[in-house]
Image (cartoon, rainbow, N blue to C red; front, side, top):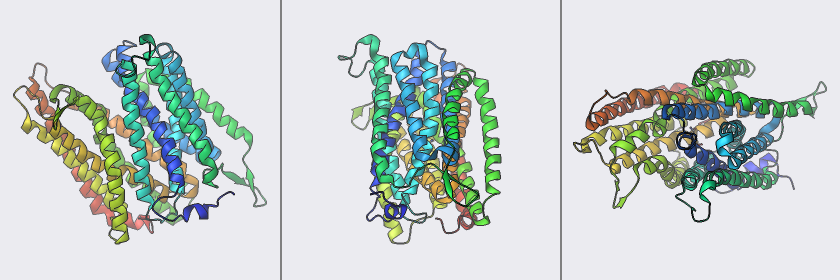
Length: 505
Ligand code: GLN
């Protein structure tokens, strides 16, 4: 029997049971996404023999486009496809992309990547929106649910991020896979898990009741009717046309600049237009959502140093001692965050539930403020690595890992909570777009991160490694200060934003 929304949202216990299926679909999707992400730069430099700085720029461009497309994916979900069809279409495009790469990565690299970029745009925001729909807008178990979902994201990210590149480089399964087929298998793994994700979702649909169905239109007699089919098919065709466009845009770095300078203002204009059509109470909530979105750009700009300047810092300035083991500093930099999220997501989820039972749970804006404060403290710890440096400019991996831990605390106060609050503050009709805009802020974060990273790596020529380390450390201290100030500002403006949020907290 088909469940009603009431029945789904009136669940007993900590989590709605449907969250587990969405957890697994998203986990496999992130395996595919982070698996690919981990291979991109390496493959471009060592297999396609591209120049290192070109590869970096193109990597940055794909990341910016991936997150920017979440806005497009969210928009089409709200207006035409609904969450389920969007997710299915996005998943299908991701499978096609990774299969193209599995067949001939050298020949079709950018074509395959472009399919995945568009596919992720349709998949990623819409699965997150569906998690939100499992809860009534004022259920205080929502944040804990998103923390759990976030753990799923990071399990996928951790395993995928490790397995794909290790298979490609021949560090894993090399006795089964012929040497000249390693990359085909590596990309093939991404395709395989994406198929698992989608099949899992097909089985999930039955338990989702009305959640994520295609929107309907009201006819002149006040009766809801299905949308015209051409709109749906038109969306599919348009998406396919976008694939070669992305391919071209990724290949010319200036195009990314133009794109980033256009999409943000256009999005804001569109949101203002939508905001003019809703009631004052709804509009105020959307303003509050925009405050969260704007601050998150700064958060990701600082946080995403991990893919850029911190990976150079790890490669050049860290020893290999982690507690009693020997470890690869870049491996720790890449996967440490995901590892800590998996462990601490549950701890945070229990803390939020425990506090909410005692009516002491901080509201979202304070949690965001705390997120920035942890981020700032984490960057202070990165700064402090300079006090443990040898004269050769090598410092402690242990201290660096503590910094990752503190930064992850910040991530856990902001990122899952951000997903949760987007679903609570959006009107029914704007769920997808608002979630897309939340991720669009990540696109800008990536973009800002690249610029900050470039400034940080500008060390005078001929300087010693110790001077280089100190330059990075000073840069991280500045970032730490920015984050702390942003945290304080958020806490100071919290009464005002709380007013805009009304009954949502
Ligand atoms: N790591 C999280 C994910 O992959 C958050 C990414 C982001 O919003 N920048 O979902």
